[in-house]
Length: 270
Image (cartoon, rainbow, N blue to C red; front, side, top):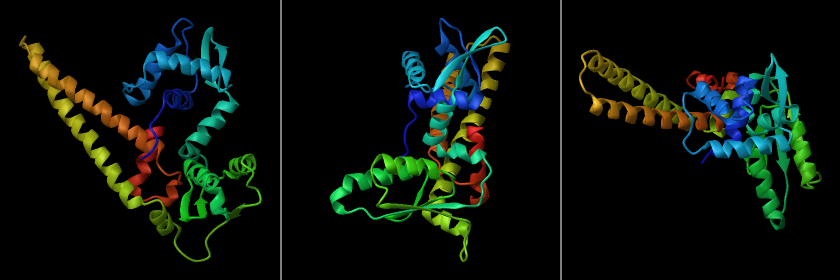
């Protein structure tokens, strides 16, 4: 299962997506919530405003955000530390950068006695968007060698982990390798299902909205239609939430390596 978005994730992703967010000093979270809604059309019900308040305070303490004064207004924005955190936690956002056609390969040899450390390394590789070529060989098209060096040093594995960067393939089709390692067949199926579901709800909502408007014009009571319309809107919001979580958990792969059916996935985060 891909990771569920936490309140902190939503907050930092919103800042990363919009830039400066106008902040009312007495009630900054209402603005953050509206900004998120403007981006994605909904606010997940599990993200209460009280949780955002804690998130803002925590983000100030960790140095991820800062206040600035601009055009006589107070704004929140990501600091350089916050930007690094977002790109580290959501490798797919790195794909807005130009791919240098290089591949990062991580090879490790960690004994069974250090199984917990080995599992921790594998989890880290997966969180950074690496794909497993073999159990002890992982590959990524992103330029995140510095992140790997820092992590490997922090857990004392410098003598057991090798990081290599290659500029291309001598033999073989990179796209076929990517399709196999990251199971793109399954991702295509899941993405198509999500798009179909949202398109279906959009059509139903459009039809039901027309009925409600006609009833209003004819002064006909339509409580049943309104209830149904609200149910459809709720289901659409849930589907859009699933769509966003699918996007942020999507493998960190350059569009050049993806089939056309998956290249639009990046528009969800734009």
